[in-house]
Image (cartoon, rainbow over all chains, first blue to last red):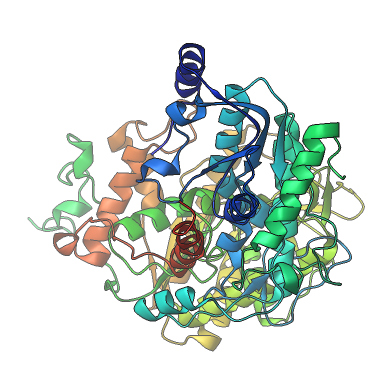
Length: 255
Length: 348
């Protein structure tokens, strides 16, 4: 399922012109990573933020931006939290043939693993990211206000697989193993690099990971982990919310 | 009155052999030395035309051997873009028999060419398979090449049938004798007349190279069956100061004779006349595209129809696309996504 961005944008603009809209300083649009922020906002009873959380199932209505929903808001700042999980899609779990790649000339690979060319992994990730950047394009086209993209939280270095993953793996008869943290970090860095280019093309500022949330190796620090291999918790979400408010106030990506 | 041609089969007689009136009926194969079952792993290598062989064998349900598969998270389009699945390994085009024997030697470690990577604005090219694209560093190139050569060894050990399509006799050699698929300086690197030399292989040289390659194959796979074909695709350019058509006819003639020589003396080596089908007077040139060089899909289909009839038993052929089960990568991605979807359950 795909969407006609031009047609959808035209419809959004039309609806914006003919129906009342809720003025909101921050409109946050994303997928699963948005939940940490939404819970933080809910906990403090915030009225300055609205969230639109999409699913990943393309057959569900909430998988795509709905012009009716978009046209309900008059935001001061549009916030993208899409494109946060592509590094995991490529390498959260070990494939049949474990691989690694050289991120830069100072990098090394884990012995015994297949080396895949960086350019090939980047091309595969870009193909993964394109549907998400199409959503960002749609957001950019729907509003005449500044837009920022929130960098996804970094991987968790260690930690048991979430029980739900284990259950799902058991149902599929699979022996799932997490990929090495070093590989997951490289894929995450590659995702950030690709998104930086995509965001630049959209005149979209990138909001970095909140300060103080990383461990000494750049992974998500324990106090901010949700308990699975991917997501941050509401405490982390509260920090992102603070970043967004600061940016909305003074336009600085690093408050 | 009797004479040696009195009772010959129709296929031995130009006027009686089907094909002159109805080109699609042209079938120049009288017999084959062996057949190919749907279970036997079939590996391919060679020039551009060999790509069609691989594709059609796969479509027709043969067990095409992919010893060097793309990473599991690659889609088909990306895989092709980066040279996977075109041949059994990501060797790129192996135009000459010299390239083939050296590829096998490199895989077993008996030949280590001294050629350095070719510099391009995009990065470093592997001089022996520039078509796979640029590498970002020497370390990346060398590590990936080691994997590639390991996979070539795996192909040699795992195949039952090896289909090799001979393409060219003209080649450029490095000072240590390493044969390049294309001349240095064309796609990258620098042409050095003091270091790089031109060669136009003779029949004897092609025969020797083919036999050396098959010896290396049989050293690890004594029961391998081999099919040699000659690519009907003309040379794009000749290094000799003469018309490219003259060089093309010389080159194809040498390859054809070399293939006949090797196949004629070896019960496990067969020659398949794809060159003949495409260039036959019967088809009146219609199997070449507008550039008089590219082979049309109709031509490829004719070749493969004959190939499948004789090696695969065309009556048994079910040209059905295999419906591949979801790959492990797809499942992994789905589960990784599922984590996120399940995250959302509590957020609405």
